[in-house]
Amino acid sequence: MSVVPFELVIKRKNTQTYLCSHIQLEVDEQNRVLQCMVCGLVLDPLTWMLDHCMALQSAMARIEHIKKEYKDMCTTIEEKKKELRRIKAQIRYCEKNGNISRLASRSGLRKEVTY
Ligand SMILES: [Zn+2]
Image (cartoon, rainbow, N blue to C red; front, side):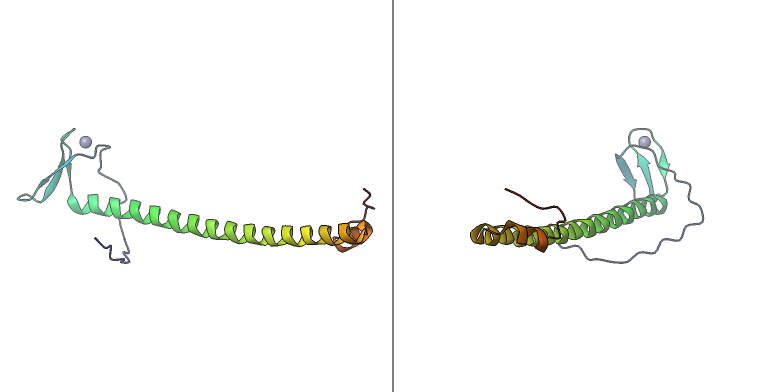
């Protein structure tokens, strides 16, 4: 089953919800209403749908925000990995050439590094 993306703009004058906390609903097709099977509350189908659409939109916005944060974190991790590889290469170079003070100057360290 594929999900067709769509954009829904919800303009509501009355933001009061008429929902109960139960999720078991009975659809009365003849009278075009929803009724909670637990507490008996009769719900307007359009109001129910709008409330759920708004909750879905909010969840989708949170998902997009989290995706962006994840992508930013991945970018930062890759940058830090490159930096780590560069520093390790500098350390290997300096160890090979016995010049640890060069490492300090390359890495911007002010303190004299000693073994
Ligand atoms: Zn209920």
